[in-house]
Length: 217
Image (cartoon, rainbow, N blue to C red; front, side):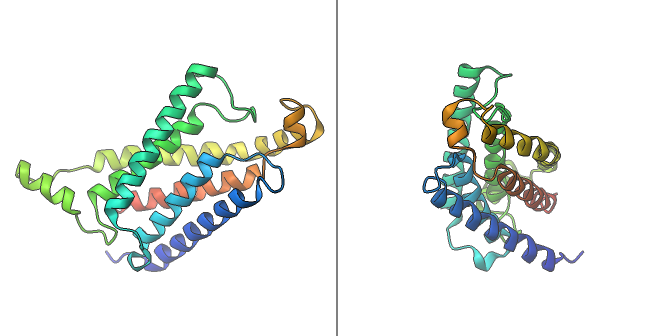
């Protein structure tokens, strides 16, 4: 079955837009004295660039080995942040914005692992990668990773739906912070920068990543 290249170009453009927008967030947040999830935005920038290159191979300007190392580091960093958050605030605790839990970090760790999986299992053009071919030769058969792909797809879909439902709550939270009933004096004068747009970036990234994982089935 022919792949819908118009969809892949469209998703690639969305991913480029997400990367550019998140770069802008990093540049203006401090200047505007707004609070921002810097770790998440850096992750979105990297994932957006990488996925755009996977969807449209000629847009890929970074070697696959570099991306593998990059997302390995990202996954480890978010694992460390998840552990630190759980130790400090507990599994049921919330972040300073009173809206994000430990899952805020765990889902980005999972997304980084999904990126590692896609780079390891397939090349950007959709052919088996050198790593996958080496493993296949060693065991004498082509391994079937459809189950792992499905697990990632389900997690990403659940995250997208959860975050879509949370957009309204984040909007209300922003009003509370601006109104002075937030987490403290610093929160009132330094509210979070466009939390709903940050969530929209995450949702679009989950959808694009889910589509790419479907192609690995």
